[in-house]
Image (cartoon, helix red, strand yellow):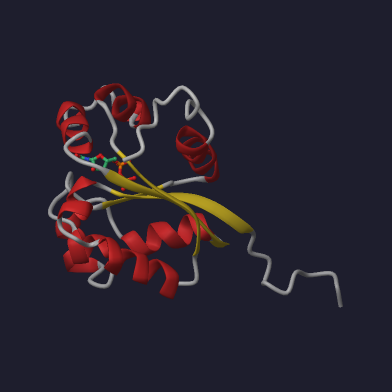
Length: 157
Ligand code: UDP
């Protein structure tokens, strides 16, 4: 008919995924990437970087007044992270669904097939990140893949 998109109306989207330091340390990278590809995402970009304190603080700036913020920055700077741009229809919500709830203990109880249930530890060390909205996805993708790369602030390992 040509009036409706054959994809049911869902938009092709890009989202930012990150395997956090505990995920890399625990050797979960290949399992996580397997789940990503199996769920129909294309990995458009992939890079290992080490966040310094300034960069981790700016990435999580919206949480800067929270009591957990200093520990969050320590965690995020405790080792390399793997950042990826994922693409698929409805990628933003679908990646959030695949990673599961923020608190990995809750994830194990209520979303046993989620990535945080598989490899997260608690409400801080939860193994992976996913953009939570179209605006965050755009901000976070440009944070890693457009801004500052020339000045070397993104420190590729
Ligand atoms: N976090 C934490 N303690 C909390 C809540 C969050 O250390 O009580 C950390 C956790 O690593 C989380 C990140 O801060 O992934 C960002 O929190 P947000 O609420 O945005 O959760 P997310 O979007 O990652 O599920």
